[in-house]
Image (cartoon, rainbow, N blue to C red; front, side, top):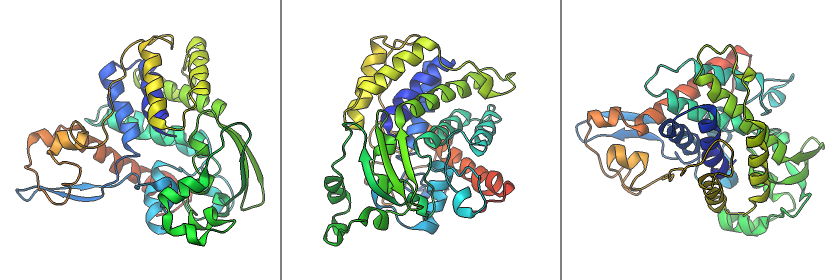
Length: 358
């Protein structure tokens, strides 16, 4: 999923689920920031203090991410959550929509309501949870299930894949073969290009097991939005026994949101986000009529810049001054949420199900 869903739709569902505008912005920002937090390593302060960061995404990860051992720590806990179903590790590593593992991750987040970074953890969890619908059938390890051939759209959602590959992997063009996407992009859905992330797309392919796979994204994305709303409804009602039993989106909101996603088909995700923001401001989604705040990933106004003063190209070159402001910042809270989620999945949830990936 792209920013139109992870930020725009998640903001809508969190507001309809009962969060205040400020809290909804925090959750939606953390949800999207999972895709934008690409700087790992220690943040060193001028006075000698240090803060550990862990990248929850890779730059251009959809297309050029190929190192299996390193990427299991990114793809598995944040983008391709294993369902733990099957006999072999390869089968158990496959991401499946709304799996028992995914629901356990959600329950982990709900149990942290009292933490100072609870909203940030809710946002990181929602990113991974809704991605189980978009990324189903793929995994965060090298696998035949990630191999793609005969990739085609069932509608007008054709992607000029050669242009995109040339843009992101120019060094591969000279070696282009019929299966270059699968060979070059063995992790996640890289070989399927952006089809899994487009809300309106209908598409099909053959995986490395010679299985024909047909996908219709819209009903899957709507189910993800509805379940995200249920999570938030459980969040604001701690007495709720089970988030899955919450009412979710109203029928009117579902109809309006589905129509919006179906017709918002620009290939530019930022333009799609603007369409969603315009629709919400106009009151097109029953139950919400307001301005969705701007999302700033990097630079002035970003969580990192507000917390540290670091500009985009300063990281590692400039050591900021440590203060109590950093401890209360969204940036610190987000990165702690990332570390907590990674530990919960890699060291607790998956091993308890006999799945050790890192």
